Length: 62
Image: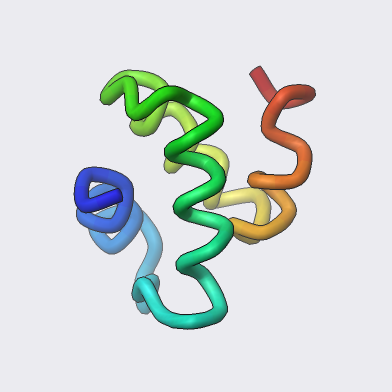
């Protein structure tokens, strides 16, 4: 999750891990098995969608 949060904060102005984003971020990291490249690709999708939507639809995105 640390890699996801670092990359997301560098990519999206104002991104923070808080109570509203933590469950989605944890789900995304679990779904990609914590693989760094997959996390980087998932973060790139945040420019187009919210973390909760990405977590719910990740299997369709990749």
